[in-house]
Length: 232
Image 1 (spheres, rainbow, N blue to C red):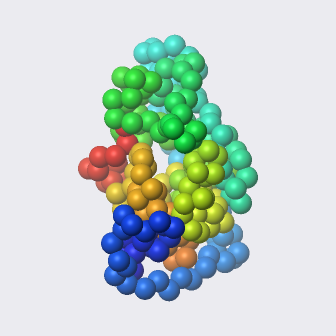
Image 2 (image 1 turned 180 degrees about the vertical axis):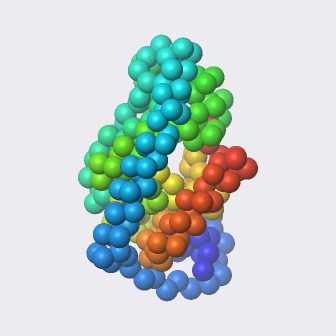
């Protein structure tokens, strides 16, 4: 089963997609699995925050030294069961810059050579170091280490009208990294095709979850960050 098949199956207007190549046989993530997943999240996020504290402090000092504004940036995202929460990131954009809106009224994602991004912020985004504060979101129970990446509410409203089962990705906590990111869908999703493939990967992950799969994703994510382009 491929994410390409799921993308074709999920999008309501299929003119831009090739025919499916294999069937899907989903297995749902049950309550007991969610409890195990949450326990692992608490242990690993606590340890990570402890050992990464020097990195956290160093990045904070460099942000303050290279641009004006706060160290942390918070943004409303849709979380578990579509409940809103404030996702934390190291600030990578110039302080006080208003969000860009596209012609559909949804918030525009950061793109290559985005003028809002600071020079040091570009490094943080490319290496995903700007995501480290989300360990706090994980410890709070708002996020998981692995899961679908949380989107801003305007993106959800837009894509729910275009992609079948889009809301299914909210049946588990959003993650710092995920199966979609390992499959080349890291960073900007500026087309319905890309978003449909991301949703396909998110649904596949939820329906095939295992602790071993989470460990695999966590171990492979640094390699993806190092060798795969996509985040700006």
